[in-house]
Image (cartoon, one colour):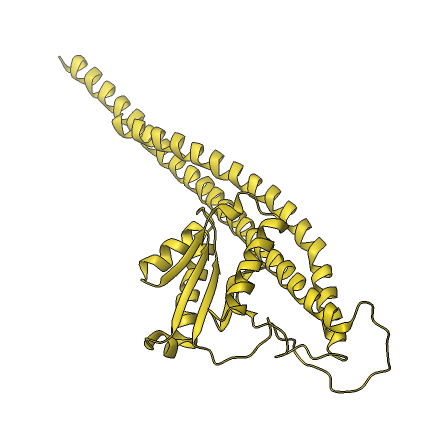
Length: 294
């Protein structure tokens, strides 16, 4: 009967785990819906801002002619790694962290070897920070609190700091590595140059004259920093949505696994119980036969 008690205890434990994973799945699904709504609101705005900058490039030089678009020889590199503070979301954190290490070792191998260059990390999220620290890379800062209150204002302060680091030439290139949200449970590991800010193609033709108010140069100097702030905010929203999607998928799979395990344990319990009952019947029968023979 001890075996039956053990199986019963395991069934109870797995059922309890199933309740937890099922609840976590529902919570993640609710958070994912909220994150998706925020992304859907901001993406058209980002696209429109970039379209305006492209239009401006027909009239005024954007690339290599602003404080945030200056092309330099790349000696000092800063990698912005965005992960999460919590686990239980499958390979969400481990995949992006391994990608970051592989990325910097392959793309910036010369800078890593040079004593005159810097290859640093700026980590957002506890999981990524722990991985990068374990691999002995230089980390200039770790910000885990940003996810407690993610707002445009807080991200703007971070973007201002990054733009200042680039403007003061402490870093020649700043790159972002994050999970780009697609649909629930599916995200793309992405690396993207944040600074210098360069548009895809500046148009050389001479369009019809337009009247700009205020002046073109002023618009250019104002809109690029605004775009960089909004872009960084959207990237954080992408990463958070991808995290919720990954956690929802992981908890769904855990719930399904728990359901399957409960079925197996229940079958095992019934077999053991049947065997115990059969054994007791045989013992009783054997005892009755022994008494009868006496």
